[in-house]
Image 1 (cartoon, rainbow, N blue to C red):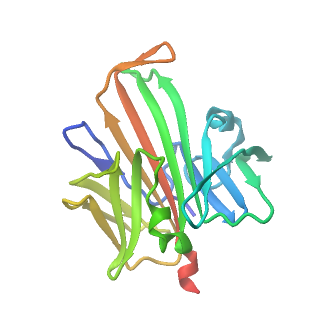
Image 2 (cartoon, helix red, strand yellow; image 1 turned 60 degrees about the vertical axis):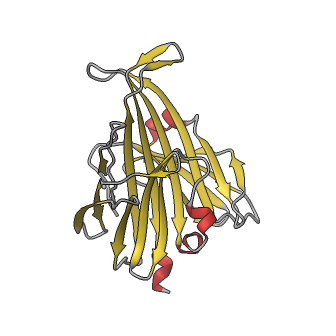
Image 3 (cartoon, rainbow, N blue to C red; image 1 turned 90 degrees about the horizontal axis):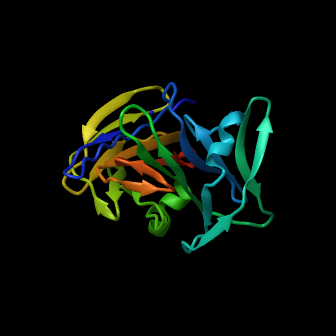
Length: 236
């Protein structure tokens, strides 16, 4: 399955929500393949990708979440098969229900304006979707909070816990059907008629905030947040 976000506010915010794989973009993704196995990916979606790029995100902080919402820090190991790979860990008897990651990628100088790049990632499945505590992150500054409603899956875009209104949203399913809309005043969009597949969500926010990090000056801070939304169990 291939996976593919936008907003603008007075903070110079640009936000894009994407379900699907973009052609060349690399972002941090996380997923639980079972209750005791967690993986972090650096690529176009939550699946193994270029192994030679994995070290670029080895500084990522990864946390599993239990049913009560408590965070459990994880130490992942590199797993490479051929040219593709991921960061993975398996713990016997663990019963994780959520997974999150934070990655400070550092300051990059691309084009005329250097920027500080930060990645965030979250995994939600049908079981954790029913748990409000797990849907709302306590560690991701830029977050997309899903919730089930009578009309479908509601997605709220938040930055520092505050909803972002008038965010342009693009939704793409596994058949590449695309819908473009905007968040309402409460920062929400609705995913209607959600299918029992895995959707991916990606959000970008740009802060016009100059500073210096690790001896490198930057003009803006770019935040990217992803959510792997696994609704496969809805078919059962």
